[in-house]
Amino acid sequence: MPQAIPVVGAVAGALVSKGVAAAIGGGVIGSIVGSIAGGIVSVGVSYLGSKAFGKEPDKPRIQSSSLLSAEIKGGGRTQMVRQPITSHRIVYGKTRVSGPIVFIHSRPVSGSSDKLDILHVVIVLAAHEADAIGDIYFNDGVVALDGSGNATAAPFKQGSTVFASVYKHLGTANQAADQVLIDNSSGKWTSGHRLRGLTYIHAMLCWDETAYASGLPNISAVVQGRKLYDPRTEETEWSDNAALCILDYVMSGFGLGATLDEIDLGSFAAAANICDEEVDTIDGTEKRYACNGVVDLAASPRDVLEDMLTSCAGFLTYTGGKWRLKVGAYVAPMFTLEPQHARDAVMLKPHRSRRTLVNTVRGAFVSPDHQWQPTDYPEVSNVSYLSQDGDEQISATLDLPFTQSSTMAQRIAMIALEQNRRQKQILFPSNLVGFQLAAGNTVAVDLPRFGLAGLPCTVTTWSMTEDLGVDLTLDEDGASIYEFSISDLKSLDASPEVVAPNNTSVPPAVPQNPVADAGSDYIHVSWDRVADSDLRYVEVWEHTEDTADPENDASRISEVYGNELTRNNLAGSTTRYYWLRSVDRYGNKSAFAGPVDATTSGDASIVLVLE
Image 1 (tube, helix red, strand yellow):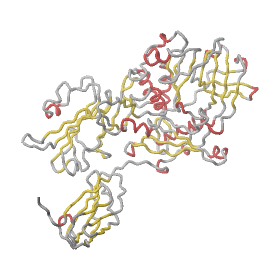
Image 2 (image 1 turned 60 degrees about the vertical axis):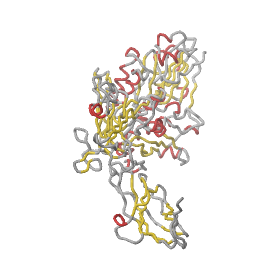
Image 3 (image 1 turned 180 degrees about the vertical axis):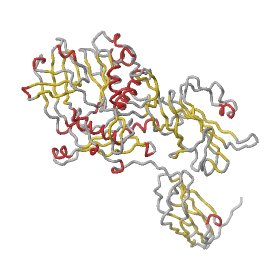
Image 4 (image 1 turned 120 degrees about the vertical axis):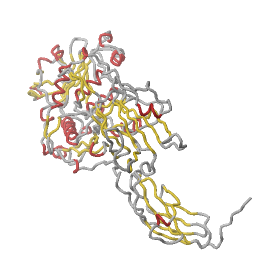
């Protein structure tokens, strides 16, 4: 029997043999097919990826392509970046995103001024036409805009003066150049700079100390992304249907570049219908599966597919020249395998290694209620599995970068846990009947010798042998894997959260425990470090006497980024009073702490030496 070589890298699986690479196609698929020798194989990529539960004996805790590590790539999906070369991004569904700054220009407010008080910034959000651009964020706060893109609320509008305007461009095929940039860039941005096919925003910022207390803000936007082809209606329109998002990536030139002839549209249509089903939640209903997130084209296609498949507990295969998709829902067996279908001895593995079992699944999803930041969903556990494991919690991490619902995340985690605890695996060397099957199919297994009667299983690998047989790997399946009740779901409030700061109007904490100590010619002022995550600096104010109004009577002598300051070269017997005030990145200021005072102990005066 020749060696069965699994297809890795960019494809989910392949039905290939020597000499048939040309028939399969070129590009990503062809490059991999051309390197495969031996028997015809058919395997698949799962939403659990190459680190699936139970697949790596030495690593019982899976780490799906990490949501948090994905945030780090390229500086994070919500962080604008300044770099000459960066990868394109594709937005599926709806999510908050930023991107590379492709143009930046400063100019005076008027021609007579020498101060470059106005800054124009162009940020590309997606490498395709988008359906809509929604809320605009400066740092972690939404900027209120009118229909013309002008700010309508403080600090970006004060009185009748507007300090921020944002112009949105969806990347249509007939997109015109931004007229404001043409009029205000001294010829640097022309009518030829249309950026067709690119979704971008142009932010015009007018300097103001209050509006931009922390400097240039990080600018991001909520984008309703790519329009998708739907084989059920033959229309192309926006959708966050997980099956349609995966279909788009498989067919697109930036993805796998498959043609319609290489797609089993029936499987994708059936999967799309499952994704659109309404299921009950704690306080209403939601779609069974949705895909909302960002694809970075610097990532390998395999990693992209594994991440996207997490949104629907999916399994993607390439078999018989066709891509097929199965999502997380039970499918009745299409065939029953019996002893007469085996051409050789069948091997049953009734239990997985204890080291590969888990009884708790936890991870992160992207929460729109928490500034679209990674947030822990309530962990999923099972009391009976805990009992079987001697009440020892064995956890696995499953991050869901394309999921934005806590209850949807829990349902996907439940499926992962249940699949892990269905431990039976069958190595079935079938005769020619195996040619009716493909990776991803559900079959029933009747093997009386093993006590199996109609056991539902999923075909996870399919390999043709030289003697025209088919070696199948079958993993235990069942309808109960995909079932849940509302009582199984927990409110997000019942679990720890990762919350992004949103203190656009909340003053920072007052510096605590200020102390002033003096030496012969210096005074050292210290305080407890301010813990606010959005702290910009601490102002230090000084005066020669106590006052109830330091802002008017005292002098601001420093902006400190730590929690101490030393005033050197003071005359002897000098007394100074100090007040402290925190300032955050939004320009909010705390109340004053203090005063604290100290007197230098020396008797020398300050001498100026002139040369």
